[in-house]
Amino acid sequence: MLVVMQSHATEEQVREVCKRIESLGLKAHPIPGSARTAIGITGNDGAVDLGVLESMPGVIECIPVSKPYKLVSRDAKAEDTIVRIPTGSGDVIIGGQHVALVGGPCAVESEAQVMAIAERIAQAGVRLFRGGAYKPRTSPYSFQGLGEPGLQILAKARKNFGLGIVTEAIDHESLDLVEQYADVIQIGARNMQNFSLLKRAGHAKKPILLKRGMSATLDEFLMAAEYILSEGNYNVILCERGVRTFADHSRNTLDLTIVPAVKRRSHLPIVVDPSHGTGVRHKVLPLSRAAVAVGADGLLVEVHHQPEKALSDGMQSILPDEFAQLTEEVRQIAALLHRTVN
Ligand code: PEP
Ligand code: MN
Image 1 (cartoon, rainbow, N blue to C red):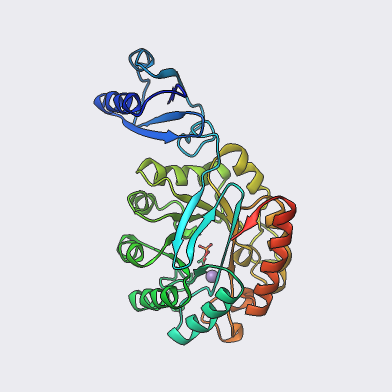
Image 2 (cartoon, rainbow, N blue to C red):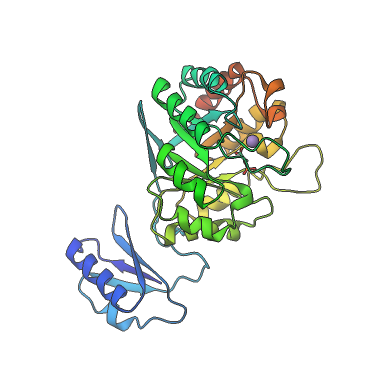
């Protein structure tokens, strides 16, 4: 259910409507827009008595939302959500006209490795750095990440190079720590339907990068995001990272069709990860070009200075020089579409 306020409704009127909603035992989510504020209502299993809200000062109408998701939907908010990520070198902006790039290794392996790669990412003019301190691995015998010492290395890279840090939380415990160190908290594909983790992410004070599950439909993906918004965190960035199909020429099938599909249904920004999406180094550049051309709000790319020695995902990691070329090419493609890359 959505309560649509008049364009000239006062903040006081919005507050009163929220109060009334809460007094009915429901949750109110005011969603300010450039033209008007809408208030999403969640927590209602059955029908809500609309009459009482519709007659309140400042309210235009109450509309039932037929989609299973509400807060992530364009019905709730017509304009694109823009997520601002503070870094040591100014805010990085994702969404709307702004395309943001993220580069870095799959995993934090050592301080020397992170510093060597971070320097090259910053040199390419990119201000967001990725790298997992907690790695969800298919095999329990594979490298699981350095944990908190890895987060401390990332914090050092942040300080040395003015980078914002994107890093994954795999459970509640790691999320508590990642929230302290990171600028963006990544929830991985394997956790897209870890509902208790999504709820915890909804209470985090940092933006969330939510990766699509490897067999998730668009509705399931948006419902996972809805979990986060419904707990109060509206700074969610979706990430397409490929799905499992019968195709065996790549690790996953990068589903770029989901970008325009998300744009139609949701106001949330969506970035594309061509590294996990293809699993093959030489496919990363062409799919990055395609992702920006199709309207993605950013790219999440694995970069390693010594991919042959990487402890995870070396096969799909590109070299720093290749990353510099990639950023140059996608800047040109974005410019054609009147978008700026940051
Ligand atoms: C990653 O980004 O390193 C990662 C583990 O990705 P995904 O969750 O998409 O597999
Ligand atoms: Mn990886």
